Amino acid sequence: DDPHYIVDEAVKTHVKMIKETKGIPGVNMERWQEAHTVRHCALSLVGEPIMYPRINELLGDLHSRHISSFLVTNGQHPKAISSLIPVTQLYVSVDAPTPESLVAIDRPLFSDAWERLKESLSLLKDKGQRTVARLTVVKGWNSDEVEGYAKLIALGKVSLVEIKGVTFCGKSDASNLNMSNTPWHHEVVELCQTLKLELDRLREKGGPDAPPEYDLACEHKHSVSVLLARVDQFAVEGKDGRRIWKTWIDYPKFQELSARHVQDPTFTFSVEDYTAETPSWALFGSEEEGFDPTDTRHRKKKKYPKYRQFDERGVPTHDHNNEELGLEERKRLAAMMDEKVKQVGCGSTVTQLKGGEKLIQDASLMFRGQVIIM
Image (tube, rainbow, N blue to C red; front, top):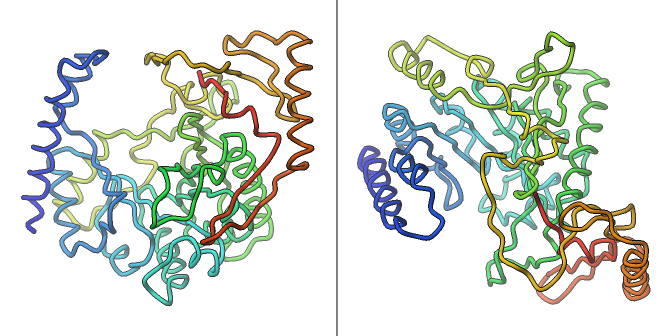
C-alpha cells in the first residue's frame, strides 16, 4: 500500500476513535481535545514493521506531519535496519540471551535467527539516533544468563536498555505462558542491577566490544519496567555536583533536525542533540516510582487488603496508606507465609507442565498480588 495512504488513514481512524470516547465518565476534556492531534506513532506489536518495503517513505511522511516515530524490530532483518532513515527512537527486541532460548521463546522463522539478531545489534552503534535494546523478562524462561544479555547489548553500544516484565494476556494456543511467568517490579529491578554490574565488568575488561558505562536512570512501577541509560549520552553534572539525567526527548528539536536531514542528506545529528531533562518523578528511586504526580489514579474498592512495603521475606510491613502494620497483624501474615513455605519450599521452584508450560512458585511472592502502587 501507499505509505501516505497508510499514515493518512491511521490518523483519521485515531481521531474517529477519540471522538467516540466523548461523554465517557472520567474523561478529561482537555486531554480529549489534545488527543485529536497525533504527535507520536509506535510501529510495534503486530507484525514486523521493518519488512514493509517503503518503510522509509512512511517514516518520512510521519515526520513531515511532526509525528515522532518509535520503531520496534525483532532484529531479523539487518539490511533493513542499515538502510533506515533517522528514527526518533529505534528498538531491537532482545528476547533471549542464548541461541537455544531465542528459539524456545521467539520461535523464529529463520534458521540463522541468532546470527541475524547479533548483526542487527551490531548495526545500531552506527545509527546516530536513539537506539534501545528492549528486554522482555519472562520468569522461568529468559530471566537467567545475564552475561549473555550484557554481551548482546555491548555489540550495539545502544543508547538505552529497557527491561520490562512480560504482560500475561490470558491463555492461548499460541503461547504456553501463565501468570507465574510474569515478574514483579522488584524482580525486574534486581535483574537490571545485576545486568549493570555485568556490563561494568565487560567495560573494565576492555577490548573493541567493551560497552560504554550504563546506569539505572528511570523506572515505571506500574509498567514493571526499568531503564538503563548511557552515562556519556544522557548524564550531565549539575552545579552541585549531582548527576542530572536527560533521557526525555525534545520532540520539536528532533523534527527540526530530521527536516534538515531531508533537505541535506549529508547532514547528520546525534542522540545528544535532542535530549531533554528527565522529570524528578520519573527517576529511578523516586518516591513517585514513575507516576506523573499531575495525574490522578482512580481505583475500585477491592475485597482484599492492599500493601505498600514488605520485609526481606516478602511479609507486608505497611498498609495501603503506607502506615506501619501492628505487631499482631504482622505475626498473622508471617504465619501465613510460614505455612506457604511448608507447601512449596524456600526460593523459586519451576515445574514443567504439559505442553512445555512452566509454573513458577515462590512463597515470598504470596502477598505481592495485594500491592498498591502509588
